Length: 466
Image (cartoon, rainbow, N blue to C red; front, side, top):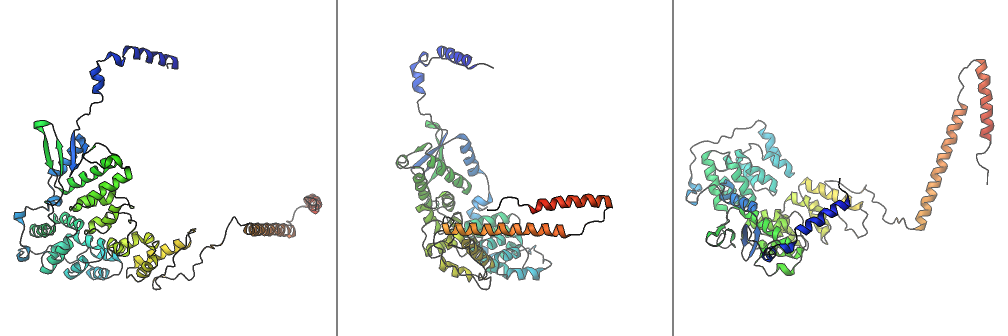
C-alpha cells in the first residue's frame, strides 16, 4: 500500500507530463462547446433534450400495436351496432348460487356489490351495477367477460355500455376484456368504445420527437396513448429540473416548484385525457393546476389526484369526490378538517354505504384522542352505525407544565409506594404465620435458633426514625 507522500509524488509527476497547456488551445475551447442532443421532445413551444434510451422507448410506444391504444379498429370497420344481429348465443352459463350473488348485488356496501359483479347474474342486474355510484363496481362489471357478452346482445345493454365507456379508464378496461369475448361480441364492443372516444387530435398541441441533423432530420408526431403518457411525464421531469429546456422564457426565472406548477398548468389545459392524467399525477396540491384538474370533466383525470387539492370550495369538492364511497373513505380526514367539515359529517352519517359510516366513526374517534391544540369541530355519528356516548375523550385541561398538576402526580406516586410497602408487610406476616413443616428434633432446635435471630433482626428498624 502506497503512502500518502508516494501518491502525492506520482500525482505531481503525472501533472508535469500531462499539462493542459501542452494541448492545442482549440481542444480546450471545444470542451465548452454545446453538444447536440440525441433527440428533442417538443410540446408546443417547449422542447427538452432526450437521450437514445428514451427515444427508443417512445418509438416503441408509438409503433407497437395495442387494442387499448387505437381501440382495436380502423374507423371503416366500426359497426352500426344498433342493427347488429348475433348469430351465436352467449357462452355464459348459469352459475350455481346465482340467488346468493343477486342478494350481494343489492347490498348497501360497495365491496359486496363488487363481489356480485364478478359472477354470472341477470342482465338487468348487470345493467344496474354498470350505473353504480362506485367506480370499483363499474370497473368490475367491465372486467367480467360474461357480463359483457350479456350486455352487448341487448339494446338496453349496449346503451348502458355506451354511457359507461365514456370514462377513459373504464373504456380501457373494456377493451382489455374484449379479447376474451366471442368474435362478434368483441367487434361490437370495440365499435361502442370507438364511438365513445373523443377525437381531439386537431385541437391538441403537437407532441413530437425530432432527431438527426440537417438533411437527415426526422420528426415524428406522437399519437398513441402510451407514447403521449410517457412523453408528458418526461416533459414534466425535465422541465422541473431544468435539464435541456429550450424555447421557453419562463424556466430561467422560476424555482423548481414554480416550474412544476407552470408545466403542469400547461398540460392541464390539453384536450387529451392521457396528458391531463399525467399532469394530475405530478401536480402539487397547493398549485392552481391541481385545483383545475380536481374539477376536470373526466373522472379518470380526477382520480389521478391522489391527494385532495387545497382551496376547493364545496361545489368543487363535490365534483372531485364524484359521489364515490371509496373516495369518501379515502379523503375522510381531510374533508372533516375543512371549515364545512360538520356539514360533510352530517352527510356521511346518512350515507347508505356502511363503509362510509364506519370510516366516519374511526375518524371521529381518532380526532377525539389526538393531542391537538386547535379547536375541533363537533362531528355527529350515524345512530344506526354506532354511538359515541360511551367514549370518554382524553382530558384536554391536563398540562404537565402546571406545578399543581405535578404536585398531584407526585402525591399519587407517594400513595402508590405506601400501598406497595403495606403489601410487602402483609406478605411478610403471612409467611411468619404459616405452619412449619415437621422436621426432626435436632433440626427443629436449629431452626428455632435461626428464627430467634431473624426476629431480633426484624425488630430492629432498617433506618433511624426521624
